[in-house]
Image 1 (cartoon, rainbow, N blue to C red):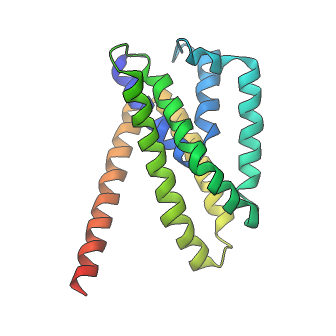
Image 2 (cartoon, one colour):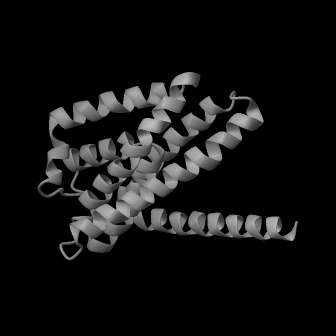
Length: 189
């Protein structure tokens, strides 16, 4: 993976970790183990271990089902408030490590902010709005859509990293525009 693709993949994987902590790490582990798309260097090469891959599969299944059970999903989101930014930091640092000039601390901080921001938007804005407007019925389909989105973004981060970067820029611009418009509308009242 060339350096620029590594950075684009890092952004995609960190954003994906904000939706589901374990899917991007699992995809990275599998891609690192079975393809030449990424070569993880120490200490991140531990992700390609069969033990780590097995653990990521188990954690992915647990998070998948925990997020679909009405009472459990709130506790899961509280736990994931800590886990998802850390997973994003790992994913960003591991995939950006392809570039030797990027500080690991900077990579970890970037991953924390990206995954933490996506998780905060999801858990503080999207999920409460879905719960209120659908009486909780829409939470399961939205959760499934989040899992599918995390999977697709994680795969595309390796296959077409420039596309992921473009999508992230457009989505970020839309969110900023939406929040700016909403703030101005509230000031007008």
